[in-house]
Amino acid sequence: MSKILIVGNVLKDVYLKLDERQNDFELDENGISWLELGFNGAAHSFFKRTSVYGGAAISLSVLSKLGLDAGILNSKTEFKPGEVLWSDDPADYRYIFSHKGGITYFVPSERKATDWSMPAGTPEWILVDRSTTVSMRLVDELKNFLKFSHGTKLAVHAEKHTTPAGQRLAEMADILFVEDEPAVRVEEKIVDKIELDKPNTQLVCHISPRKLSLGEAEESWNIEDADVMTHLTVYSTIVATVLGTIAAGGAPADALLLAKLNAENATIDGPLEAEKLRELAQEELKKRANLKLIARSLMTSGKGILAADESSKSLAKRFAKFGIAHTSANRKDFYRMLLTTPRLREHVSGVILSEENAGYKFSNGETVVEFLTNHGIIPGIKADLGLRPMTGSDETHTLGSEGLAKRLRKYYKMGFRFAKWRAAFRITSDQPGFFAVEQNAEELAGFARECQLAGLVPVVEPDIVNDGDFTIEKHAEVTARVLARVFEKLEQRHVALGGCIVKCSMVVSGKEAEVQATADEVGMATASILRHAVPRYVAGVWLLSGGQEAKQATKNLTAVMQCSPFPWSITFAFSRALEEPVLATWRGEAEQVKAAQAALERHLAANADALHYARSEGGSTGGTKSIGVLDWS
Image (cartoon, rainbow, N blue to C red):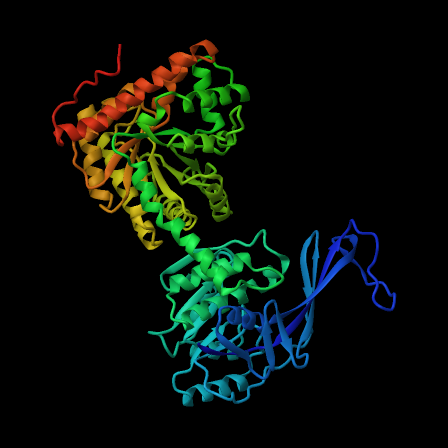
């Protein structure tokens, strides 16, 4: 066991839950009503009260449930499941009000001093809890103790707004826990303004409302649906879990995973027992270990991806082209027709859905996700929320970072096993600019990291849009520059490339270019750029059709595959190039469904033939071979 001494104060939290729907006041033993309180201009009365210990008692509870020998300086305590027992009541009181407008709490105007006294033994760790009233005297006494107690290490949970004494204390820490404000790193306020005594050995653990990091390890976490008390004590839960894991010999990655799980699952009754934490951690690790297996399944030889995740606006344009009314019923009929195509599984390993069509159900009550899974097709989801112009620019970045971790975990529970994020780059004389590339690459990498933490294979899509009159050489230059930066960002965010897929454009001439590149030129340019820019450990490459007509997309895909072999698998992930031939046949007429499905089968088979061709021909770079299965007439 590790002996951990906690330095800090104990608070007794008096929890008042308020609800404007309750009319009756609660009475104490003398028959006196409790307070009627006003929030946001409305009167409320409480109807429930629970008292629990906070402050340093939270750290004690976490460490004890992890099975570690821990105690609070100057306090006589006994830990039992669900509660801390005191020989006397050492607590200050704070009052927490949960109400419709949020959470409000009141604390004593003067905090109790934290006094130092010599401990009976020599602890392995001293944890200075956030509840500590840090004074220069306390710092000096602690420093003197550490000087003569060889082997004792110091962990410090720094306050958000440190005093000079707090800064001195931070300098002494072997592990420093700092709370990061959204978009503002607290280390800039604390760590960068002090000279650390242990610059080569000190670990800094950053805790922000959505991220945890320790060294190179990183986790995302979320407590939006957690108990109100968890919101108030969650940072202390994280600190104690990380320290307890490190003290027991665990790695930083293990410490953050356990801290995330403890924070998300703790309740007003306290943190989790060690056995439950280990059980949840095993489930989480198993989920993440499946990433490479799922990615390999998506890259199944000879199969492609059906991208059915277009926005309602995009689908409306496609419908209009063929005189189909853009109604909810027609949208449902269209996607049902695509997904129930008889031989779909023979040519498709995965389907990308949107949130709308993912919610459709078949007449037997089966969801689209269940239907695909039951038919051996891996369901994926478009995780981004579309494009938005960047501030002061007509270039775009992708929406959806806010609340992303929570959405991805919801998608996993729904049965999705991969997710896609699209960033669009337009080519002009001065675009894409540096800031557009930088911001979009950062968002793609952040998405990929969140995906893997949620157990989903990330599909990152840097789409170099082919609208314009640029040459194929210009498209190649931009593609290489964008891909290089995306993979640099992926590496910085520690994304496991073996469980990550890149979906990118073929290198083509702009649609309005006077001279259009031939299929052979597209094939050689695309193959060259991919070999140059895509690391060999990536799980695979999906080529998107990028607005190309069905015939041309298949010819260009064939030309790319003729330049094989490649260090990774390549397949197609087409939307328009597969859907428009279906729409041209269907035209919204029920009697044309079977003919439309046959058209989809032919075009899927044509693209699958391109993939088979590359293997059978052994990577020839000769002229494009005709594809007999598809009648181009």
